Image (cartoon, rainbow over all chains, first blue to last red; front, side):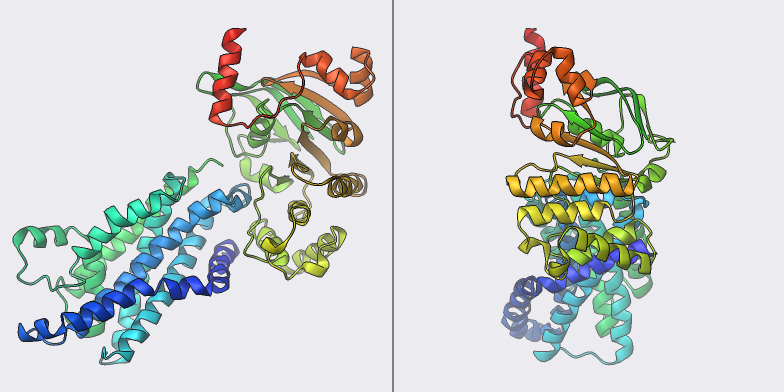
Length: 248
Length: 261
């Protein structure tokens, strides 16, 4: 337990010392929120769908969680390049504890990031009905955070250099995000797009957070939860297996 | 304390470590002397559970390293060739993480951490992040950290690489003192002959993955009838010590060299 805790604590300390990065990472979600939220707002309204900001804010909050969680996983590449990973690999502790502690730390940082996006969303007009909604959203967001930290860790266990990171973001995470229903409602989209969304874990992540915050579900609360739990468990198992196999 | 028998590691067709055997008694300072790419680091990686040997056995304090890596890990400390500090953390935080990873109790951890940081003259800088430290300070912190859990053996892989003579001198003084005061067995690798001669009780000369000679510094000189260890080394290997990186390029070069012979 202490090992998991200390690895978690390390991630938080490191993040705290690099506060600038936390703020810097806000840029992209903020741009999406403001440009899309206000830019497409009138069109959305005219189409009879209500407030676009109300729709897109949970999508952008999810984006904050997902991107930041992926980045936390990728920090493993950093630790491999700078050698700290060896210090943990020769320690007399099971490697899964190291990996799980790191993942929890990464997920916590991702949640903090999302919290900042959420606060900004509230400041520009996003509304949540009750605290219960917020707490429920926190459950979904935590799963999403853990799931994508695990994915990032799994990828970082296999690739060794930083160049792979933008590749993963551009060819995996970005498409999954754009096809997830974070930016547009999945009701009434072409069949092909709907089919893709059905197999897209990010779609369930976004739907879970949005449903919890605003009560507007597409797949449904229990299906979202089930998919997220299963995906989180699978990815944690995969990243543990890959992390254990790292040779330093 | 450390015993290797016919230890071998292959990377494809390249034999990095070739049937290496040695037996290091408790409290000895044992040096692996040889050029980079000779198999020193590969041997250390096997002894420290980071790499599985292709064949042969290793014993550390009576424990079969390959069969019970966790028990072996508790008994040794290691300073790698490249830094493994977390540079974003302070000296004390680096120590704390290490202590927790090695299951030390809080009070014991705090006390020993302070004692070691004082010993290595880092106590005044204990709350500074490691990235502000000079190369020598980082090395000292790393050695202090490797000793935190009171290991019976420490592995030092090229501990003085890139350090100035003053720092090197100071570092060896520390190592010798630890060896005398805490009876820590020291396994070190170096390609500086004067260092090996100065600190080691016994030296194994390794080249192309094989141990060519193994004796006290005086014994090595006597065996070759030479006056300095450098001359003894040349008498054994027939070449001057080479500066090489143990990269895939070097493995290629090694293979090519083996091919030409």
